Length: 182
Image (tube, rainbow, N blue to C red; front, side, top):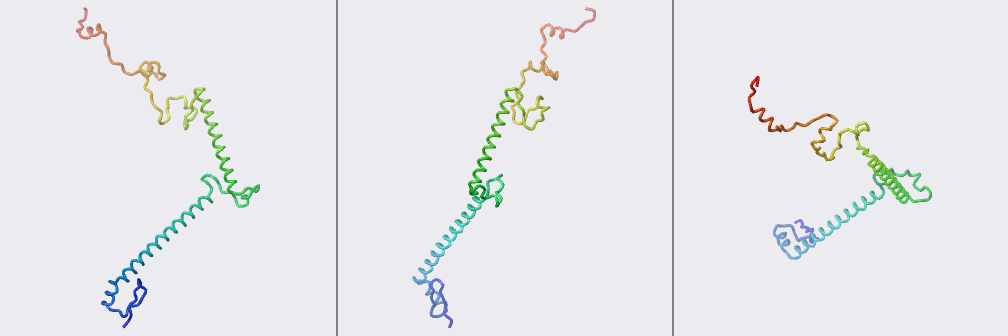
């Protein structure tokens, strides 16, 4: 008769029959062996997951370090060691130069805006120069209500409708029938 091998206990049973299997699987030794097996499996599986995550992290970290920041072209290989400076220091110098250029551009823009504000000619971005003096406001600018007396002096000649206010004499004149000849 063939023998039955128990993977958990790592041993052969005397023979393969349902009664022998049942008596073996109910025993304390088998139960401890099963519990130990799953504890080891769980520990190994958890450790392998941790190692896989660490490996992925290290690889992604290495990729990020080796990639230049957005907007910077990678340095050609033959120019890597110009003037005896390691590549990472060259990249730092390039980044500093770009930051300085950006700061200078921002300062120039601010100075131009201040000059334009002083001259009263605030230019709106996206509006052609010949339209800047018109009544067109850029998006987001608050629309101020004009006082009624400003309509009379408007260049377009627009006059809002006035409420009809009659003087007392005019009201009497309108209420009385007109008789010709009187």
